[in-house]
Amino acid sequence: MTQTDHSLGDVCFGQPKSCQPRVDIDNLGRHRAGMATNRTGHEETFRRLKDVRAKALEHYVLAQQFHAEQRELIRDLIKEGFSQAEIARELGVTRQAIQKMLT
Image (tube, rainbow, N blue to C red; front, side, top):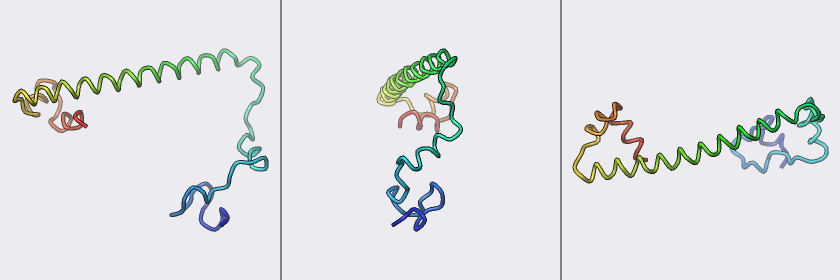
């Protein structure tokens, strides 16, 4: 099957992604069209971009750890007899927010 059999542009309708064309020498050039290939003068920007990306990943990991700790603390309070509504009032959020925090 070819791309035109089951897709429109980059979208496959009800078909696996395998119906999309593979990137090869012929269509690679189209993906790179208009892209600057000369990095001269942009090294600092690329360095900053890499730094920002690394910081974002670090913050993501920390957020995951904090979420796990928060979830554990809420579960502990529930085991001690507190309701989700009571915890929500104490935190200044809705009961639904507490339910979300538990997932």
